[in-house]
Length: 404
Image 1 (cartoon, rainbow, N blue to C red):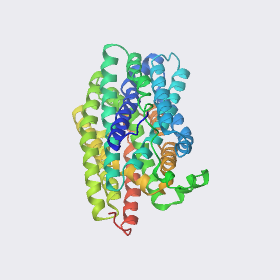
Image 2 (cartoon, rainbow, N blue to C red; image 1 turned 90 degrees about the vertical axis):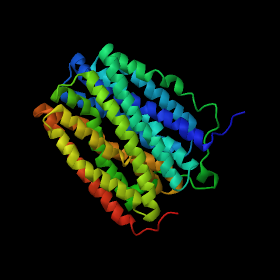
Image 3 (cartoon, helix red, strand yellow; image 1 turned 180 degrees about the vertical axis):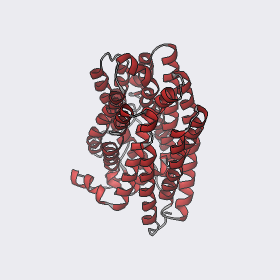
Image 4 (cartoon, rainbow, N blue to C red; image 1 turned 30 degrees about the vertical axis):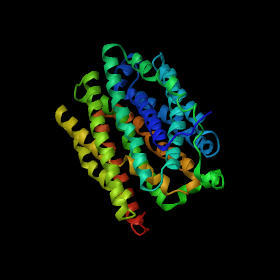
C-alpha cells in the first residue's frame, strides 16, 4: 500500500532533486569555451545555445502549470526529471550545432515541468512563515547544484572531455526520476476543500494583480542578468582573465557553494524576521540586496586583475542569493491559493520570455562586435531595474496587514 510523504520527507526529496536540476543546468557554462572551439561556433551562436534551453523551458511552463493544478504531480515531476536528464546526456553526443540546440531545448522542457510543479507541492505542505523557510531550503539547492555543476563539469572536462562532463552529470537523473513514484500523489489542500479549478483566463489575469506583477517584472530583470552571467561567467574569466577551465570551474564551484548557502539561508532568515514586523519584509530584502549588488557587479566586470574580478564576483553572488527564497514566496503568496502552480508557471513563462531567453544571445552578439568584458556591462543595468521594481513593491506592500 502506498503511503503519503510527510512534509519533512517531501521537502528533503524535492530539494535533493532540485540540486540535480541545477547541477545539470550549470555544466554548460563551465565547458562552453572548449565546446565552442570544438564545434567551431562563434560568440553569438554560443549565446543562442542558452536561448535554446530557455525556449524549451518557458514555452512549456504554462502547459505544465495548467496540468499541475489538475493532473498527477508525481508523474509530471518524474517525466520532467527523465527528460532533462536524457537531454543532458545527449548533449555530450552532439556533433553539430543543430543537434546541440535540440538537446538543450529538451533539457529546458524537462526542467520546466519540475520547476513549475515542485514549489506548489511545498506550498501545500507548509503554511505561514514556515512556507518561506521551506522554500528557502528548497532553493538552497540552486547554489549547491550550480557549484557542483561547475566543479564536476570543470574537473571532468579538464581530465577527460566536455562531452563526458554532460554524460556523467545527466546519467543519475535517469534513475532518480523514479524516486517519488512509490508514494501517493501529494494532495492539493485547496482542491480538497472544493476550490474551483483555474482556467487560462485566471492564469493570465495574475499579471493584472499589481503586487504579483511587480514581483514578476522585477524577477524578469533579475533573471535577465543572472541568465547572462550564468551562461558567460566562466567564459569571462577564461577568455578575459586567462583562467583555465579547471580553475574557473573550481572558483565558481566554491564561490557558488559558499555565497549561495550563506546568502540564501541568511536571506530567508532576514526576510522571515522582517515579515513578522512589516508586511513589506520580503520585498525589502529583495530590493535592498539587489540594489547593493549593482555597483559590485559593475566593478567586477571592470576589474583589471583576475583576483579583483573573482573577489567582486563572489561578493555580488552573495548579495544576489539573499533574494532567492523571498522571491518565490512572494510569487506564491501574491496569487490566489488555488492558482499556486499556475502562478509559478506564469512567472516562469514571463521571466524567461522577457529575461534570460535573450540575455545570453544579446551578450554574445555584443561581444562579437566589441569584446566580452564590455558586453558583460549590460548585466548591472538589468539588476538596477530589478532593484527599482522590488523597492516599489516594498512601498506598495507596507500598507497591508502584517502576517501572523
